[in-house]
Image (tube, rainbow, N blue to C red; front, side, top):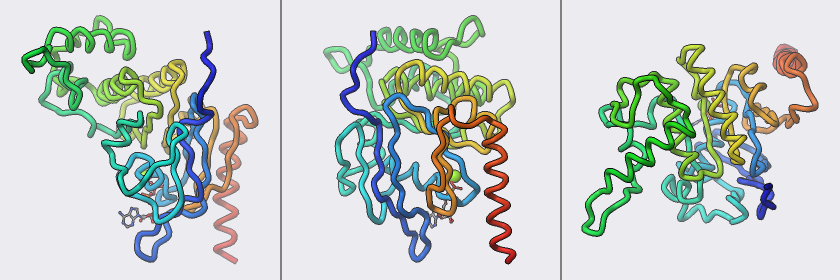
Length: 262
Ligand SMILES: Nc1ncnc2c1ncn2[C@@H]1O[C@H](COP(=O)(O)OP(=O)(O)O)[C@@H](O)[C@H]1O
Ligand SMILES: [Mg+2]
């Protein structure tokens, strides 16, 4: 059964601008992220991708412009990473999302403990839920990894999986992955990509940033290309092949170079 969407988008950016002193990092950013859309955000180093993500996730406010999350306008005076979480926005970074020495099940409940009447943590319940997330959402089966394993025994890809599984279980509406596959093995990259497929199947939205165009192509519904702080193209996957996208990006880069040379 398909539920009728109450909001057409998970996030909407209107005329977002961001200056760092005199440096303009973002300009005229107008972008809607659909409620069940996977957006591949592409751009060279310094294009402004992470800055855009940081505004959405409450790290810092824009210089001007508006952000809407699930249909409600965000008040930047009160917005923060914690608020973004409460609004269903989760970010998965390379390695930094989990505590190394912690056992896995505890990682699922940081900041949202299930307690018993006397305030004790309901360990049994938390482990049960963590186990369920691992089996259903993440798909860890028969690998010797249990809810009692320490984070330090997990590979990079598995850690990303836990962070994504956690975000999915707690019903994050928009999951943002900013270069999650940098320094991962091919096998681990495959896992991260499969997790993004699951975000799509789970009816949620995602912004995925990577330099690997082939990866971005596989998982995205749409490609948004950022160049020196501005969105220069928004292309639906159904409108372009991987080869054509690759050529477009190359030609675009060459066009810029020619302009600089002349
Ligand atoms: N905290 C900051 N202070 C000053 N300048 C910054 C800061 N963060 C990013 N920038 C600048 O903003 C531009 C965009 O950076 P960034 O968003 O990190 O790009 P990307 O993630 O696409 O590589 C760059 O010119 C960068 O130097
Ligand atoms: Mg970046």
